[in-house]
Length: 244
Ligand code: IPE
Ligand code: IPE
Ligand code: MG
Image (cartoon, rainbow, N blue to C red; front, side):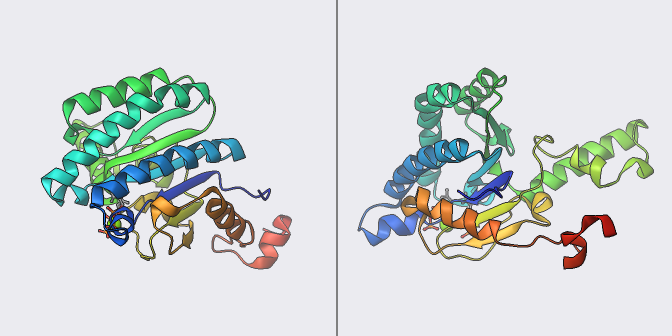
């Protein structure tokens, strides 16, 4: 692994359905295999020293899928939490979730909240599951809270700047995304992260998520390490920061 690691790695885990279809299997078998890859990539990310790993597991738009696929995904989530919690705890990983949790089935939501609570004092990698998550919903939820506070008189328009806005996002302690990976060959954002990807490096691979391996992650991180992030500045300014 190269030295320049992304602090916050985010992954759009796409292609489970196509992976299964290619093998003549029902789509849900792709999701089942996808969970195995989640387990492995999460542990590997913690091992190499990633601080924050955000995984796009279920989008707001995914609620529009057929009911039986949605039901299967919710049961998989339930199983994942139940079976993986001990591994998460023993690897010092802190579990978090981002999204509109109230939409999850009640039993699953409670299990998730309990797992988040049990891992809350862990100091290792933060594993952030984006569930029932939409980038626009996240921003709208910020706007609604701010509007409430403005109505109460506890928030003034001039209080709002980028730092302040950030503090109203889901899990505000999670920093901007440094590297965003999307699998399956699609080159789109699909409403992921939005606010935090303003200056992310993007990496696309044709591999379907169930085929994504540790070596693929190494490759993405190597690509990241070779890039120059200028954040609007010039190369000279980046090379000799004192000239700012
Ligand atoms: C990603 O795989 C998993 C979820 C969106 C839940 P897909 O289910 O989108 O698989 P494809 O893109 O149809 O192949
Ligand atoms: C994005 O994948 C959401 C997740 C990976 C959870 P989709 O398969 O839902 O994205 P679109 O609809 O093809 O853009
Ligand atoms: Mg997809």
